[in-house]
Amino acid sequence: MKIWLDGALQEHDEARVSVLDHGLTVGDGVFETVKAVEGEPFALTRHLDRLARSARGLGLPEPDFDEVRRACAAVIEANPMALGRLRITYTGGISPLGSDRGDVGQTLVVALGETSRRPDSTAVITVPWTRNERGALTGLKTTSYAENVVALARAHEQGASEALFANTVDRLCEGTGSNVFVVLDGEIHTPPVASGCLAGITRALAVEWTGAKETDLPFDVLAEADEIFLTSTLRDIQAVHRVDGRELVPGPVTAKAMRVFDERAADDLDP
Image 1 (spheres, rainbow, N blue to C red):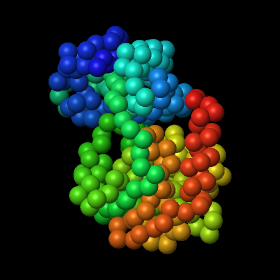
Image 2 (cartoon, helix red, strand yellow; image 1 turned 30 degrees about the vertical axis):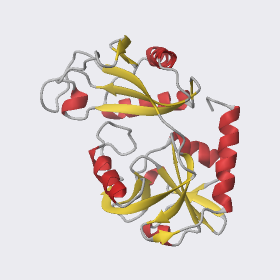
Image 3 (cartoon, helix red, strand yellow; image 1 turned 180 degrees about the vertical axis):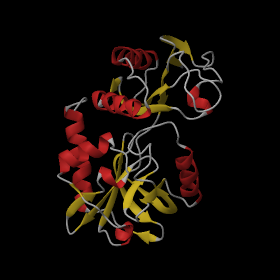
Image 4 (cartoon, rainbow, N blue to C red; image 1 turned 120 degrees about the vertical axis):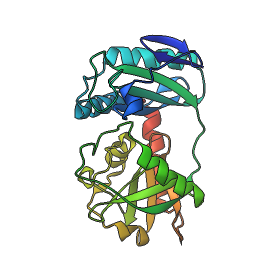
């Protein structure tokens, strides 16, 4: 497998990032995960726009879009596969030990890993930890993901593929790597970005294509919703058949949303 590092393709087992890279020492970096289908990235422009927003939010210079696009194309061409997870990572680069950032320049890594289509439905759990809707990193897709690692490990221990968070005022927020939608009386709702959730690319497309409403929701809506589904880059739209101990039957509203998303996504690879 070949990856992009330091401006060129390299064999993955030969590529080296410094142990003093700020992305490693303090999590000073941002990233995007892009779906690659039969050699074509999906919604790359939206992902790059968010990468730039996240970089600005951390005080990093915006990445060179031309280089990132060139890197993505090179990595996809070098690693042919039917369905891939394209990972773009952009960090503060080599820096002193500690929180101060160095002046050597940023690090850009683009890699691609093979994946498979997700099941049509999944189980999720809720966790007692909260998202901070007022934090310095709120809304940024950063490499500081340890909180998600812990929550996702708990989900896996309980036979689920995702863990859902409330925010600090007990409103529904998001999953470790997904956005959450609920169906109430036939209408689709999802928490607003003000809840502290990440402005997911798939979330935005689902809102546009299904007419979902952004609604401030209590966390316990998960115990009342008629249907629940998740969105993310690799899930697209995925129904939820269990929340904690509550069983759900994936319903017609979710099924229609899945169908609409698949059709619209097939029509335009860079919506």
